[in-house]
Amino acid sequence: MSPGALVHPDWLAGVLALFAAAALSVALARLRARHLRRRLGAVLPPGISRARETALLLALAAIGVALLGPRIGEQEVRVPASGIDLVLLVDVSRSMDARDVAPSRLARARLAGEELLARMAPGDRVALAFFASRGVLAAPLTPDREALTQLLRALDSDLVRPAGSNLAAGLRTASQAFEPGGERPRAVFVLSDGEDPERRGELGTAAVLQVEAPVFAAAFGSDAGATVPDRGLPLRDREGAIVVSRRQAGRLERIARATGGSVYRTDEWGSFDTEAAAAALRRGGVADAEGMATRRIRAVQVWPCAALAFALLTLEGLPRLRRRAGAPRLAGLAAAGLLLSGAAGEDPDELAAALRARPGDPRLLIELGLDRLERGRREQAIRAFRAAAVGSPDTELAALAWYDLGVAALEEGSLEAARAAFFESLALEPADREARFNLEWTQAALDREPPPAPSPLPAEAPPPEPDRREGEDSEPGAEPAEPPERSEPSAEQRRRWLERVDDDLGRALQAAARDKRPPRRVGPAW
Image (cartoon, rainbow, N blue to C red):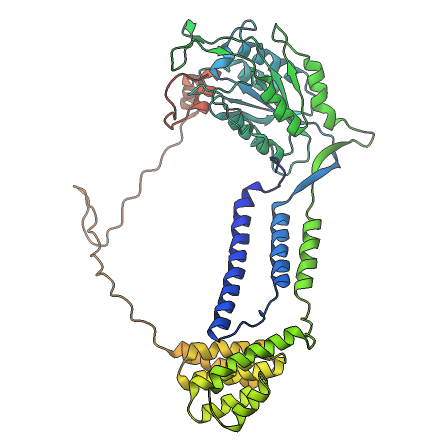
């Protein structure tokens, strides 16, 4: 599945976990039914067919896919043409200090960013972000070109440490600059050499696809490459070899192809056609006669999955067709006859003889169970009732057998088994008042059972004494002293304070890029 193919890719793990839990529940229910049939001494047809189980699981899978929001194809939407939202993402890693384009890659990137800002229309908004080993949002979306130009000129390779390149982190930061649910056309323009010494496979494409932003890029540097300066000397790697940084435009092109953007390779002077790039950025924001613009976005297709789930659930909920007399019916009767062998035994009475003549007859099984129950043979009575309940094709007789089974369980004092039997009887015959009354009585009896004795709680520790400082009033009931009110500074004090503030853009960017976490790698990074 390609990145951005889902609206909610972060839900994928949860949906898969829920589907796995549902499949496991179905499998456990089948195993439990098989164990019950094996304990009764026969292999009976399952209560729910495999086709119904498969339909239910497929319906759940379709609902899960619909929740994820699959993106299939594209669609055009008309939005007010009030301008575009653009994020300028500048690479400030150490490799941008290479001088295969004069005076350096980063200097040419700053100049290209200024040219792009100058070509933006009055209704456009631009944000500025930069990245090295992580991304930093320097300015949110704003129409203030002058402030963005000043910030752009203050960018250097000392802002982020470690100074390695992580394009995916930069794109994730750039995607956070867009307003959620905004209708204005949007784009990200990356100014970078595309190099990544770590050779990460994740390029950050999913983040920009999530916000429907195409990625455009300018690839600075040369294919031959150049050394990276390090305090006047060429930078060396961990093995001591001189580092040669080369332009990796292929990484940028993969992102552009996946998002619908394009890549511009700079020439030997570090320049590219900024006019064509600005025109490409504005393709989705050209207004028509009505002041509207057409924007192409990836379509979210939910209705096919929802329709499939509805159809499968309807199929699963259809009433079960009664089986005609034939091989399945005969197999069920034979299985019930096997169950009977444990219930009737070798009794020479008329009921046992009738059951041997008509094996599996649910009416005779119920009568046999009642007879055995009256004689105090509860074990044989329960086996007869259970054989009639699971082997009867008639729901009314099966409900009666479950009811009698619940009565037998009550006589044994097994409230849990009685409640389960009355539940089964009501599931087959919901209008049976006697079964409902017995179920409610059994549930009330279970509720009246004394709960297990709670474990003794540890003795509570006495509350700590209040911390009284020297010189404080220790009289009981004394209210704490209120803190003194702060006086507002005067106009003269505010003026002097503002004069002492250092209005340095470089320091402001360093404060925004400061990371309190310790670096995760040791050694040279570029």
